[in-house]
Amino acid sequence: MFQDLDVRYDNAFRHDEPAEDSVALIRRGDGILAALRDGQMCLPCFGQLSPAARALNWRYAFTLGQTAYFLADAEDLSSIPDGFSVISSKDYRSMGPKEAVFAAAVSESLHRWYGANRFCGRCGKPMIDSEAERARVCPDCGLTVYPKICPAVIVAVTDGDRLLLTKYQGRAFKRHALVAGFAEIGEPIEDTVRREVFEETGLRVKNLRFYKSQPWVFTDSLLFGFRCELDGSDKVTIQQSELSEAEWYRRDEIPGDYSNISLTGEMIELFRRGQDN
Ligand SMILES: [Zn+2]
Image 1 (cartoon, helix red, strand yellow):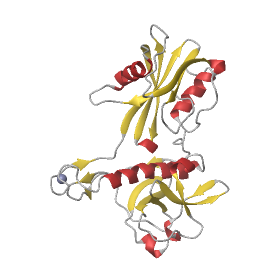
Image 2: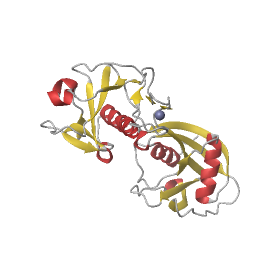
Image 3: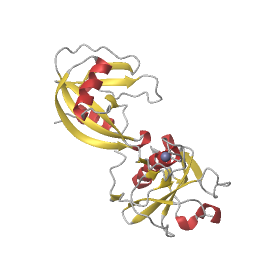
Image 4: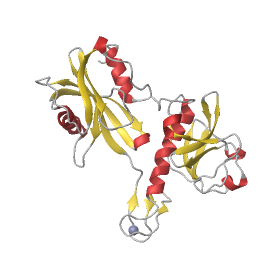
């Protein structure tokens, strides 16, 4: 999965100033400034930046291994440095190295959150960064807004040697997936699993087992991967607003078209190999 790194991700909050060897996460729209070398993404160091880029509003983001990463919005930067281009999220997901892809993906979620919280949603005044934690604070009414992280489930529903695969309705992602959906307010995550499976397919499930989580920062989500077994009838009734397909596949019939950066892909692959216990 895309967040499985060989170096430690340290996201403890702090205020810091960029050093010359700090990595610069320069966001522009849904893209990030990077150089491309043999299909690999190379993020710039602070020391490589022009005076105009160094003068942007930089925020400490996180540290990977020994390297600090800083974030800036470059919507107003008039020129892109030679040798660099703006690479969109859907393009860099399939590139390497892993550290650069992960850093770009996390910065995407942070950048979206800062951009969406420039003004207070309660009184409309400009928000400021908290001194104590990663939060935006309204100095007028005191509203505090934390980074947007939406809990959601990915569910592998099995019936003996069969796995339920789905295809989403009306999305750019056309490959096979698993039942998925967001938690509702006041709902334990296990109930999210039961509700989403029933809403999308009409099936009942039992024996829920948590497998693993994944920070799916591309949609500001935190995914909880669950495995569960069919309870009762195997007759699928598709929720057509959500799914275009939901069908049972035997292990040896499972199509290998799923993503290798996602929790969904890992769970499907483990079932296909018979390693899902
Ligand atoms: Zn306010």
